[in-house]
Image 1 (tube, rainbow, N blue to C red):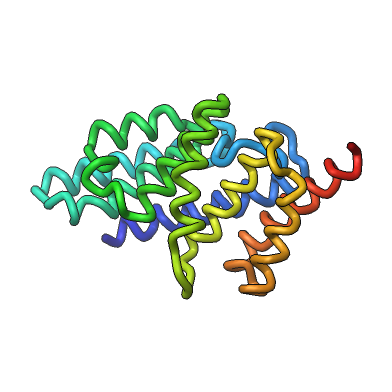
Image 2 (cartoon, rainbow, N blue to C red; image 1 turned 45 degrees about the vertical axis):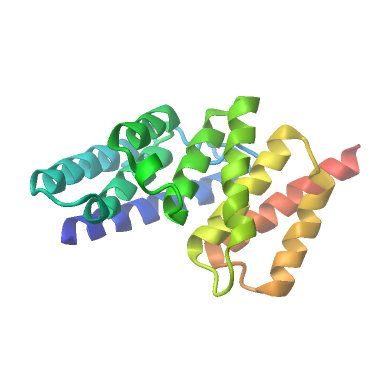
Length: 206
């Protein structure tokens, strides 16, 4: 349990670094309208975190834990693969471990599956990811968990990638801000504001 917490903290820090690099427009990092989770594999620590997370999950499985007890370990693996920009591997892990069927209604699993699909970047996968993310943004009630705001970030990025309802992105962010001024915290607030700004720039250029 302590190891899982340490890896989780490392992943959270990596996500902050990635988002900061996106905002700076750093080389090799996607911009605000990029595919959710499509992060370069060379992000420092991301590959190592994924390997450690898998080792931890294998160790936990070796202890004979039940599927419900294993889920937190599985989620750490999925999150690390997403941050490392390995969506195909994340989707394969979901299938191979049976998490996608056994926990199909768990919001964290829906988010990881939707984000991994969207990270593949082709139109069919983007649309499939959007369907899953829509279940989160349209199905939760306050108080909203962190994954609710992460799902909104991923969902609005898909709008920009597909070039669909781009004009509604900024309006949606304003509506969310009226409902919850903090927009889920500093990280998701910055990401949503950045998406709104990009959408407005696109609208102005047309």
